View 1 (tube, one colour):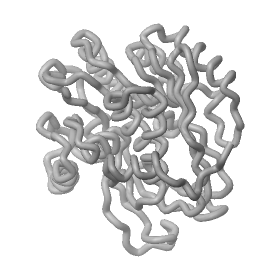
View 2: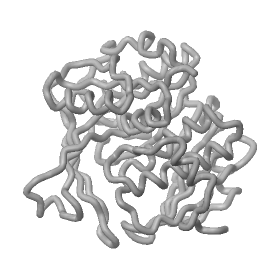
View 3: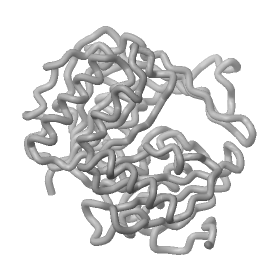
Length: 332
């Protein structure tokens, strides 16, 4: 099977230890983060040939991040170097009624200052048949949005399947244009879309198959290239207790996964990324879309039980949950 390519910003994640708040902390754990790198790491754990593309400064912190990705089995040979700093997020984990918290320090990062023409996309996509991106990258700057478009144009010209996750972050869209002015054009290149319809992306809302189908049809009318619309349904009982389900619509049918009752969340950061990675794997490797969405939901459920941003699980572990007893499952 051919290669998968992802593109975006990799970050240092400086995280408060245990259940401490940032303002209590005298030391922080150093991890790495980034939606697209999380997807790449998950896919590598599943045995896929995956390449991650980003721009980072030439320094020891960048080397640590890239070496970590390489150690997970991700191809980093197309990473480009330049700029002055790697983006940083500061993170504290939530508990029960206290929400998790993220402070962004990404202004002027290497990916935010990337210029058009910095990446040879035809070379990057050689031997690939799938490209994944998210709306976080175009949120960072006008030039990052332009480079994202360059990638999408090249991927479409070369016949790759394109998946995109809207991943809206209101605090990142600070460069002069609103996401509604930028994202529709970029989404128009996608075959698979996630996280894009406000009517069915509300945390506590119970949504019928009919509403999912209507929302999916709406997206497919707006974006004719789209073949699969992806939804996730999170029910929030507390910061430590969520329900979690995946749903996809292919223009003909709504496919729902099992609905998981995750009673003791360890770390929900990266849950959506793990879902998208597993869905990409499922759509490429399973015979049916039902199996694909079941695999995605099971993989993402396991991520909620793992500390850190990356989903460190194998296909066998996911399939054991997907096909076996589910003691924490909500029966509907």
